[in-house]
Amino acid sequence: MLFVSSEVGTLQRLIIHSPDSGLGKVVPSKAQDWLFEDIVHLETMRRDEYDYYVKILLYFLDSEKVKGKLKKIDADKTRNFYKPDKKQYFNSDKVLEFEKLLNDILKNREVRVQLIAAVCAVEECAYSEQQQFMAMNPTDLTKTFITGTTPDGEMFFPPIPNLIFTRDIGIVVNDHLILNKPARLARTRESLLAKYVFFNHPIFKEISDKIIEIIEDEHHFLLPEEEQDGRQDTLEGGDVMMVAPNHLFVGISERTTIEAARQVIDKLFAKNIVQKVTLIKIPQKRDYMHIDTIFTQIKRNVWVLLGSLGKISDENKKYQVWADLGQKPNFEELKIRQFINKEDGVKTRDFENLEDLLESVTKEDLNCYEDVKFVYSGNGEFPYGAREQWTDSCNLLVIKEGVAVGYDRNDKTSEAFRKAGFQTIRAADLLEKFERNELSPETLTDTIILLPSAELSRARGGSHCMSMPLNRVNL
Image (cartoon, one colour):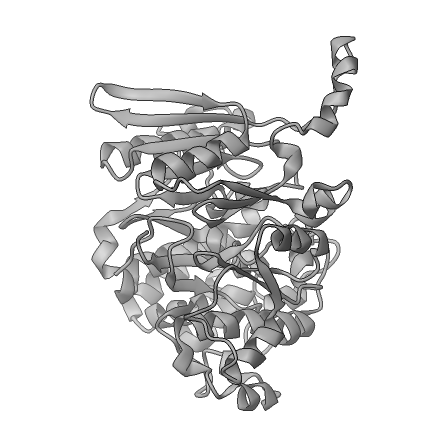
């Protein structure tokens, strides 16, 4: 069963992708083309950081894979527990690795032939290279499609290092799946591989007729080439949030266009999948990228967000005197418009600020009338708000309501969470307590789990980005 109707229902199944060798092939001259700000140290990212993410997810979603076994798992320097092509692989049906899903479908010869042809067309491969792919076994072909390099070290095309951010390949909206359409060429192959997985893997069979694709307007190809780039329909999962059973957020950002958002509204309303879609237009800046980099939900009544895109605080009102005299204060702006599908037509509603919108979700959509709490990046202090948002202080994955995964380097944001009544605990310490039965995933409440993040944060994505939820318990 695939069903997601909130951001904070208990997580039961998701897709992840562990950092692969393609990340280790990002070179400075191509880093920004491949959507990286810097090159990362792959082994540190894997062994000392991302592996903790996997172990935490398994402990909550599929504990029999890790409970009482962590010493043995950690002692294995080969890390075969995390590698889908090894017999020691954890092989969970709840924490799904994208590489394994791709490998599964490539065992079907008909799918393999189709996908080889599609990848070769996208990457403009020579015919001889296509023949080489046809001779590969599914495991080697999977690795080549993801990393761009064969197991023998021959590099056919660029890596797709952003696949670690599985949130961007698709989003489950109630019992439907929206396939995303990336804005950058660097993610084209990634999107193609995901499409073939979603349409061909058995776990998605039940929703094969409920997959929604974002396509270009039928008149797009008639536009002059210089106008086409500015009129594309692009949508990425970091800009889509299923915040309530009847309510979807879509960000208009550096990566998601208004044309794609319009498609989402039209298709979801036509099928009566949701009753509300709220568009949140954020500044098109690399700092923000997607809406989940500026806010995420932690509980029905708790949200973490970037203060400079929220209400103007009392402290900032002192600048109003300059605004009155014609000097514009340097505040960020966003625009929020909600579309409501009613029997007598689609109605609209505007919100002045992010907090008012989020409070309306808590009270009107989730029927929660507890005091709404806003936890601000960097504890709302200058310059920590912007600094810590850059390292994903607002990009948290909720495992169950009130328990979320964040990064350990965002000290001021962690302080803000503690002030709001949460405990913070480092991932390694939590796992030790789980192993000693001092704490348990079932009873843990109001906790922010802090992943080691020196390298992960340099990839410009947090735990929310690194997940594609497939199932959550309904609120």
